[in-house]
Length: 281
Image (cartoon, rainbow, N blue to C red; front, side, top):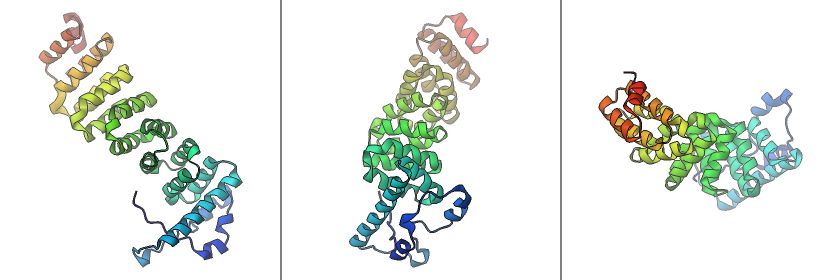
């Protein structure tokens, strides 16, 4: 992962930033305006090459700062939440340092960081996968649990990092947040249009009752693949009569040919009367 480490100056150390404790809510606004003890920017200076020994020294300072916060709060999760509240721009750097310093606490670190700064979810997931603190599906589950509303960012980051685990990413994501199954499938299918069938199959095998929502979501973005979408959904829901009827109804409302829908219905074991009831004829 490419990132520029900035130098923690001696003046910051002498000013007592390393001894900073958990700031109370009364002065939180003031603290948020302070220069971060983890990074010291100099925007006017422009990009520069930082000597390795200075990078190493900076990393030591940053690690020492985090350890001090952990000692004071008695929890790496609480320390991260506190730092993130006052220096939100540094949350990814904090997670980077924390995962290296406390790798066995990766669950607490990821959960606390995402809960504190949901907007950095995608970067945090990428970082955790890159560092191999756990399997990609485990990280996906943990990240979605921490912030369910950012599920699309989680699966996007995971699928980009480990495309070979796409099926398992879909399965875990849908099981963890079934209410977002349609969005999960839509997001990943748009990024991997050649794997729509595999993505749908994984989702419907994990949570069969989401079939109609998945079909509706995919037909909205892939109208030219309507037959493949519906055929796959019906096939994967073959043991769910009521679910198949809802899928057929959704597809019919989206303008899919009734001739094709009847073909799928009969092949799935539905009667003609079932088909008629499904499409409203």
